[in-house]
Every structure is written in structure tokens, then in C-alpha cells.
Image (cartoon, rainbow, N blue to C red; front, top):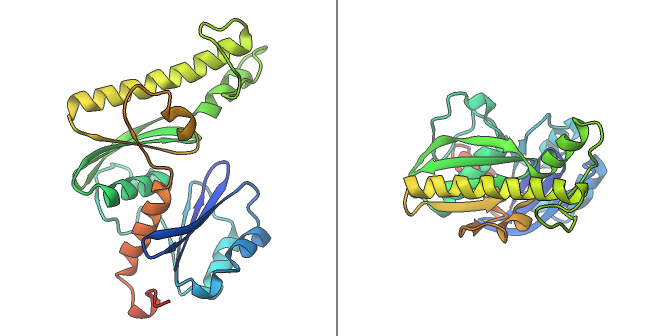
Length: 252
């Protein structure tokens, strides 16, 4: 069995895979050694491999706990062996979450042209053409836009997507909410329209923490795939494990 750990900006996500099948997943706000041990305890004797993806520094306890009992632990980086060609000019700066999402897209739709939209702390638009990652764009995510208006102005309150609003807004909270939400929707719709015009038949994938909120508000049909980063990480782990001795492979 495989342990997947994805350390993001606001939370940590973990999943257990049995081969290609996800058995269970967890979303953790306060990621501690005790919390990690408790979640892994029922599976620890069955775990053969693990992969860690992090957009920041990996807490030392993570490496320590994993290497105690798991034969093969892979830390995702630009040096990892990827199942697709990477044409990014600065691969060392490419976020591991973006790498994983592209790998997941390639796993599900090999040989296709795909736009992966990951609506998390930031919004990323990544383009996979056949077997080649061509690059992508990054813009502020939903929560970041609300916080920016509040933090970089003197009087604007902190709004959120949970506020019921009309457009145009009838008060300041409505005006902020409508401006942020509608602005992001317009941005995503325009990105999809541009890619579909240039690449007819392109597959559009939507994932990330805010994807469930956004998908019903888009004008275009998308593949809603909330687990694509998990699946991409598991795919990369299996792909890299082929380079290691047979004793690390899952015989459970």
C-alpha cells in the first residue's frame, strides 16, 4: 500500500492507496507528529511506499516517522522521474502540487490536450499537450483576493464567498463579494474559452479546494476531479518505484 502526503499552504492532505485505488483520505489543518501517527496507525504494517509533496518546508518529523517503517520514501522534486516531458524553463521553481496535478491528468487522459485548473490558495492553469507539459499561469486564489482587498486598504472589510450577494452589490460586503467571485469566474471562463478556441476538443479539468464552489458557476463543461493531485502523486510514486529493487514493491 502507498501513503500519499500533500503539504499545502493552508492544510495537509493524506491518502492511502492500494495499488491504483484510493482507500481513504484525510484533510488536516493542524499537522502534528501525533496526528500523523494516529491516522497512519491502522495501515502502518501494510505500507510499502510513501511520497511527500510540499509547497513549503517539510516538517522534520514527517521524514523521521516515514523512514522508520516504510521501505521506500520519495520526496517529490524537479529531480523526480516524471511520466511526461517537462518543458518548463525553471523546473526547480515548479510547484510540486502542479507537477502532481499534471501527472494525474496524464494518467487519466494520456495523449490528450488538457488544461488543468487548480483552484486553491492560488489559481493555476497548466497545459499538457500529448505527453509534454508546456507551462501554465498563476493568479491569486479566491481567499487571497478577499484578504488582499482587506489587508491593503484602510477601510474595506474582510468578505468571503459564504456571503449572499447580488450584482451589482447593494452594500460594501456585497460589492466586494460580487467583485471577487464574479471576477474569478470571468477569469476562469476566459481562460477556458481561449484554450478551447486554440485547441478544439481540449479536456478541461477542475480541481482544488475551491473547485466545488466554482464549478456550478462556470459557463463551460469541465471534468471535476478533486482527487487528481492524490492520483498524480500515487502515479509518480509508482513510476519512480520501478527504478528500485523488487523488495520495495507492494506484496501485501
